[in-house]
Length: 411
Image (tube, rainbow, N blue to C red; front, side, top):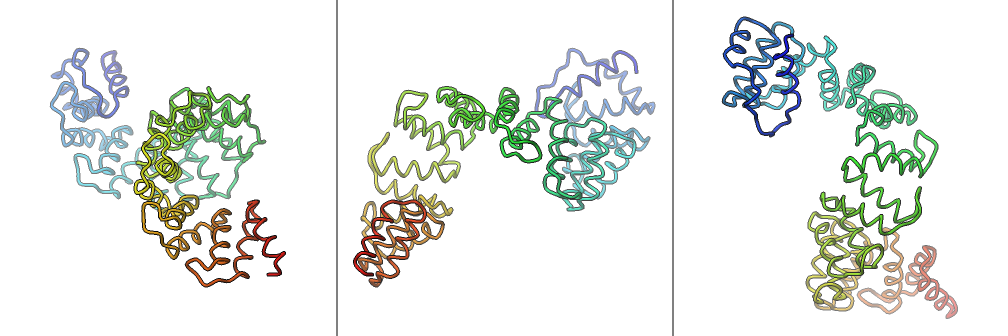
């Protein structure tokens, strides 16, 4: 392949979807077309990619497909893979997964790594895990980072192979050592949990950091957690806040909520209830139940916002309807006390029961009280005592006190 052709191939490979096209370094288009029309498969692939990206020509998915097909029919592996992907997503052709698989298989049989990995992905979607694993293995052994991650996942999930965490960790490590941020994060999780490797918070922190420094939000969040809890590192709320913020600014809901909590408590940052609410809201608006509950608390207590019981009720309900026990209890409290709604013991009882059945001890204790007093339900001290005991067994001191009181009264 001559110099300009190599230069063009490198430039095309460097372009990502949606990146701006450039023109200054495009070789003479007429020369490219002549060589493509003369049947040079490598040049046909380049011309197809020029049409796909709109480099030096008017962008056209159909023209891209036409030139990829000419090269693919000559057995050019990259063209076969490109044609596979065009059929798979329906770009420039009618979507046809069978055609996609045929072209990817042709390319994969020639050893084209991306085709082998993506063919594995297609089989995985079809839940043919044995065939998927076979193709992941082929590409992984030749160094494909994506295939190494996918093969690790197959071993971790026990799909197509017997579940083997040690083997999963081995393949994740290969991808991680090539600098893949997702694999670095997963390996960190495995060290944190002692899954497939000897448990080590220090090793978990090391791999989280590698991924976090590449900008992976979930790794940044987990690194923040390590600093907040003093696991693998000395506890440092300022450092935790810095990593939470990096992830939060990328939209990570866990980090947004935790950054809000740090502002609430003044840990690692200057205490600022309004700033806490701002971060809770960002996560809550994405449907994150913990933040929705926290935002409800802020409105209920007037911390960082003007006290607003109906607004508190609204956020509690959003989290409660997703099954979050603390919010179910808090929603029950609103009905019990008549805050933002008319007092309704029956409605309160229903929400307390949902939380109590999940083992939420304050709700269990409140249910005991309602049965003891006959609020929204027939008075029944035996049932009250059962709920108090559940709360006590879960470590809730008020439940223990209430249980002993009824016990001493002979109930």
